Length: 177
Image (tube, rainbow, N blue to C red; front, side, top):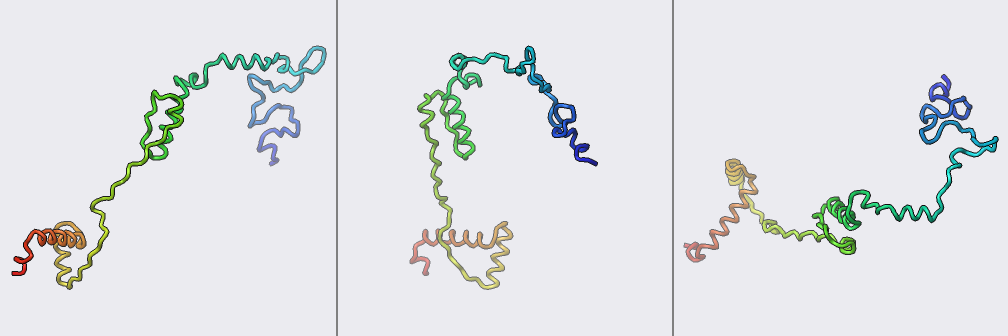
């Protein structure tokens, strides 16, 4: 099988058709006819016969158009930027800023809220106490922990904390008796 049979007409071989299977043979604006049209065979392109506007006329036409943000449905450029900053905040994982109704300058120079400082959890444990137990004591601790649905180390911590509270409430002299 030849390459041209698989891929459609080969534009380099001049198959007589304008275009290929991948590209259409013309559109509504541009025909597939590549010949030049003109009066008396002068060879001018039919699309060049349209008169071009002067640069001043083009600038004036642009001045008469409403600004792009109004064409997109926004009341002001500040509203567009406020919405974009809110989107940026969401993307960055910050609380979105509410900049509605602010002037363009206020929106441009607005800063995102600083992330709230996370307080250190009071329960964060920074100290460690190690306790050695015999096999029997450890097996009884495991049994009690299973009964309460806890791990042995968690139950042992609760015991140490609670026993410390009890010890501090009692009079040290009466504990020796």
